[in-house]
Image (cartoon, rainbow, N blue to C red):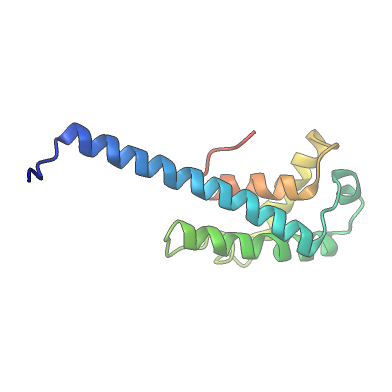
Length: 126
């Protein structure tokens, strides 16, 4: 048997594995966002704008905290970029507000998902 692997074969295999991992992470994020939406309710962007700050804070934390923990695990990271910051909801709410102003036909969960992807340096989808 010949077990020699050329560097080019190794790079191709590594890149294929890396891309598969990214795809799996993006798919998991979409699935987790959909699951979180069903658990916490999905405010339309129009209804989001009418919420008080306390309601926005509660929904944002309830929605993003478990998703952030999931992403931390998927990325095998020691840092949880949302949950490790006790004031993480502040920029998240600002991001969701801005998203909803630009996309009133979508939902707050879409804006929250986009914010979390940026926070975790993930490429945007769609």
